[in-house]
Length: 258
Image (cartoon, rainbow, N blue to C red):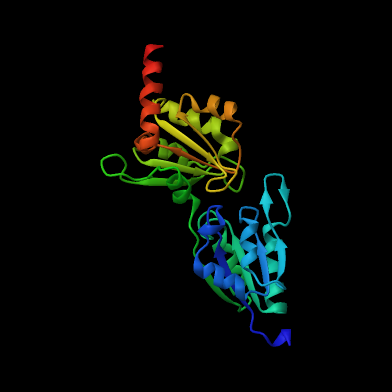
């Protein structure tokens, strides 16, 4: 009987968007689940790994459109684990990188329910890599910042201003609605020529890319109609991409002529 099954919740990272980037361990967890609660950023093709009779519950959150609040999601996970036993919480990217995975774990474990975490490939590194952008490179960038563009109180993270002062690569998630503010901070640090790449829907068939500099990227975003969800990459490593070296040489030479 269902109520004799020991409750268990597995947080699974769905990866950056391409369903083939789900880990084998994640696929195995889905195949064993009785219930799957999945996010908006988790590619729905991944649900094919779940058993046919598994209950599927969409709990995605987008700006201005939340299927459930976080508190409701936490309670849904617990209720389904207690009722059906084996639950998978499928989260985009990696559960512990801007995914509130630790908050969900804390709540679930407060009910004495066993939890397991299956890490996912984070879009922080995977999406730039899919475009040939290495966010660290010897002699160019020794480190990187990974920052959420929008905090829980809907403000731009104060860390962006600190990151703009460094020589590190800066990768910003959930920052498209704050892009003018982000650009302003980098311009204040006299980094108008710093290369920028914006990758929308990275690793998926709907992927769109815009590249430029701090001074030009807002116009490029407008021209290419780029929007969320997107990764913003600021740093000299963008220029180091073999496919983009020629672009930047030509682009910057035109800027000098002007």
